[in-house]
Length: 445
Image (cartoon, rainbow, N blue to C red; front, side):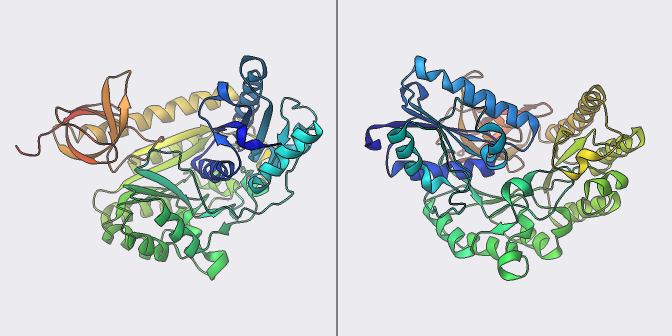
């Protein structure tokens, strides 16, 4: 079978780490077939799935079923399922998810062409999950706007939080060699913003070098001429030390922003979650960051409704938000996942209570974020132009305190031409709890 004549469309679900896996896969596809962004025109459709939560698994399966309809509505011949869903649940889905022709795990992408050839030649459904289990890809087809990109510096996790499936899906924490990361970053070309991601970037290098080398990696990435800025996502609180804080404060290329997934703030719940630290230690860390890094924007995520979260524990989380005064935060209702230690915990919180608490937490943080953004009203700030919002009929971009997709945007007008990826001085006229609105000011006035 000559796959060179086949059009391949790829749908990527889940997190930014999964996006990077998809980008490696896109480069692999480029070597033997033709990529298209139109599923209607594709003979082969690949769904790169997420399986972290029940809701993510549901979305993955619904997406697979949806695109299976292109067998009659479009040109679809083969539907391929890759990523975390088959990696963890192939034994449960291979027989039942008959819509799919080929299954591969997240480290089997190098075998994609072989799997497709076998599927075409035999007419059989193919299971290649775990057949290779190593990822040798070095090239990527970047799927983000060209001025920013993610750099996945490690995979897997050793933290073993009691609610999390990641170790059973992605395995042990595995850092990418520093030389590989530097080469990959340089190949990305001119980048306004390089976003470092992993399940926990602060543990980068421990498995390879015996100790964390995140600061060393940041320094070396900063020395690359094509990298203008570096953003840090997913820094676990117990590993944010003075050396990292100093690097954030003193390195002009490091964006003054940090994402610290705290997950809760009640000491008893944190212990049940097997999370490092205590409420007071978290507050001390946040205060230290704010003191030593001028203007730093701190973001976090929290889980509510964890088994055993009584009213007192919830109120402790709620009051923590008010004390921490984070720039932004995301919230999730706890999802009981079979195969995790927390699944067997007693005192399961009803779904109705979870939904009510989730709504309340969002309300609290919304007012905090609204106040932070309102402080910029009337000021002129630097904004990177990301693209156009055609519904709003405005340009949109981000200030330093906003990461792509998870934080708010700056919507603006301009009487002068603007170029994607460039910074512009924007005067802020209005704000809400999530977004800002303004206009580009003329540099010559």
